[in-house]
Length: 218
Length: 162
Image (tube, rainbow over all chains, first blue to last red; front, side, top):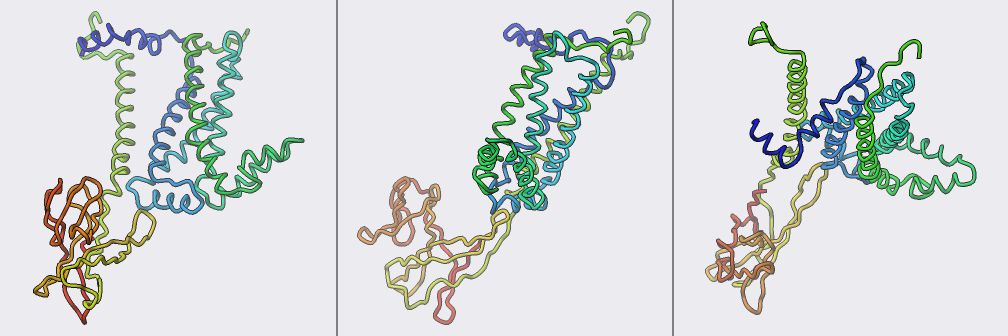
């Protein structure tokens, strides 16, 4: 084992990477500081379960609902994979939001961590976008009307509202084009933005270190 | 370590151990079900074996394979569909009937009866079979599959296994 590690390290510098990531110095902190890791864990969990859901899910109005019924009732452990994805999504919005509150109330967004904060805002918005686009995919009554209402909100933007609404829906009404583009956004566009931004976010967390809990006189 | 016994576990080792065990547990709890999830459709066997009426005997011609199509209800995933299949019925000189599958025994392309040459030919890798389904040339390892047949009320029936 030790020989293998040193063989690998000599060729890849893996031990340095390990030390920089996992053996960096951190101040004495509390449990609120685990919310970022919890969000990362949930994001990875969503990616894994989501990838496997696409193996049975079919993003068309004719098949979407039936394919999910099939996943839930007939595929072995389909209920588990979808259940984890469903509840993981809700939980992820919660942990990401609480993570933001922690950073805000501890003033951890200040110099030199402004860019970490900005990428964090992007991550929060992308997480909400994933939740919004994923909500339509079951194509049941709740999904359909929630998206009808959600996209209508965009229509209230002055001047360009109607245009934005059409862009979002892929037409004037909710249709198979809406389902198709929400699916594309949900499994390709938003996850790509999410994970690349997580990369920058984590780099900055490691590069700048994490902030200590502010003292009373600060 | 000093005076501590050999069994002493430091806080770092303890936390690392707990993290490892939890990680392995979560990986197993998700990983094992995922294997079942992926192989689920492969384990599903809905056998619809049975006798299928194919063609009236009067339609058959001695020595000439007649293509006969029939459809079978098929359940794929959540969809019920009709699977349309074609077989070739051949009336022999002595009145015996052979029904041949049109699925090439090489890599399961569809063979076609070529009346001019009097052979079944597969378009994929040039497998050629004679009128009885025996291999003349090409890569097929065995003759075309045959169906069990019976005649009822002047109608030819075959036994379909799936």
